Length: 375
Image (cartoon, rainbow, N blue to C red; front, side):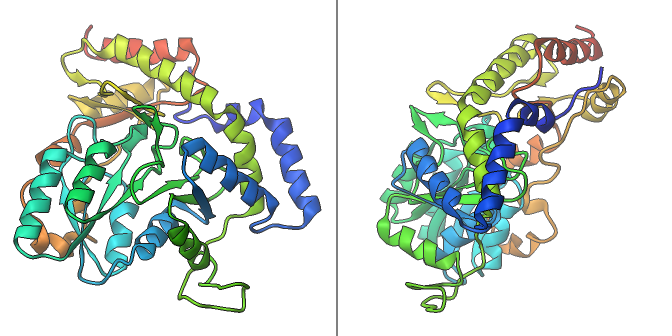
């Protein structure tokens, strides 16, 4: 048996006719960049997340970059963010001349509130120019944004929610992309809601911020494209990608439901293995399962064994952000420890996760893991 880690082919087969028709409509319209479908998608995404405004852009990294600029990030300012995530989150902070300070994670793989508050107090106590928090919804699970928002308000900070992996997740019936001053997501093909190329979106409830973001994404334009009132970017969504996302959004909730069924099967089968820690989803939360990530003993041996059985795996992530060469130049600004982040990168292992895994495929994966650990 051969299993795909993420199976976009099965998904495409399910909605092939709708996708073909959507792309054909765009080709006939001739509006290939920020056409009518982009406006329709923005409206639907705003309604889905419960936000007042959604602004599409070229990719998830640009979404974070533009969000930071829209909140007035300055060179030399400090931003608290998670040490355990994809590089893009911290990359844009550094690129804009600010200083990322890394916070440890808890058992959910998301930012640890205790460490976050401790580092807020330490930075402010040392009179550092701390301006905001950039949180991440890792592997599909929202961070504890209720408390992060509270801390941000208490200490006069802004908060950006990076929901590149979190779209479709919930916290107390509030959807990912509805938290913070601004939230962002990515439509990279492997994301919970992905297109067939690159794409991203930015969400806010502030009309002033939304208007500024609309200017920033198109070269800082004003009332028309030859009136440039800000220094901006070229970060527009292709209309074909928007048309694809509109069709994918129609089946998205059913896919999230199925992924939760798959996750439940994994957890039930693997939770008693002493050498494995299964993912934690706290009460009141739900995940969109961008990844199903275990912590395991004998990781490389298990990966090799599963590969022989036709079962792909991945390691997200092999290094923490503070361990990367590019961000090492900020080491002098780091405070405290990031014990969980450093320990987890040594043992994390992600299993195949998508809405088109069959029960038999999930059972096959679990049986082989059980067999490897002699259960």
